[in-house]
Length: 109
Length: 116
Image 1 (spheres, each protein chain N blue to C red):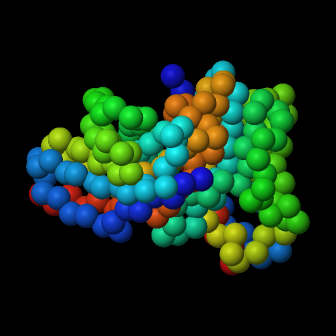
Image 2: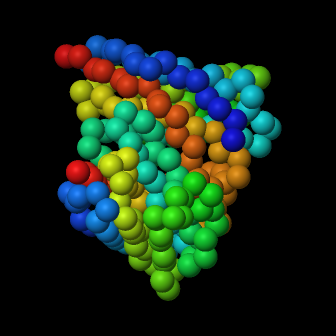
C-alpha cells in the first residue's frame, strides 16, 4: 500500500476552520483517499473519502490536489468534540485499512 | 441500526494465560476485520474475513493467535498463551458486501487487554 505523511499534531481554536494536510506522493491511479478519526477511548470512525474530485459531506470537506499527491481534510468550524486523531489512508485493494500514526488534533476553547 | 458489538470491554490477565474476544458485526456485513492497536500507534490489521473465509491473515501471529467466524456472522479472536507485548486494544470492524475501495468500515468500541 502507498504510504501517507501527516503532521504528528495540530492545534485549533474552537469555531475556527481546521485544515489537516496529508501527503501521498506515491499514490496510484486507483487508490482512494480515506479519512478516519478516532475519538479518545473509541474505535475509529469514517469521515470522508474521495478519488479525484473534491468531496463534501456533513462532517467535513476533502480537497484533493490536481496531481493527487496531497489532500487536505477541512473541518469548517472545529468544536471540542472534534478533538481526535485523524488518519489519512490510501486504499487500493479495497480491503483492510493501513493506519499510520495520524494527526492528533487539539481544539481549545 | 445497531453498531458493531464487542465484548468484553476490558480484560486483565497474567502472561501465559488465555483470553478470547467476541465480535458481532453489523447485520448483513459480509466482511469482518480484527485490528490490534498498541498505545500511541494506529490500528494494525490482524485478520480479515469475507463471510466465513479468511481473506488476509498475513500479520496474525499464528503461533499464539487464532480467529474464527462461524456461519459468517459472529467472530472470536483468541490468544493462547498471552505475552506482555499483547497488551493493546483489539478492534473489530465490518463492512458491506463487495469489499471495494469505497466501502466504509464500521468499528466497534474495542476490547482493552492488559497482560501482567
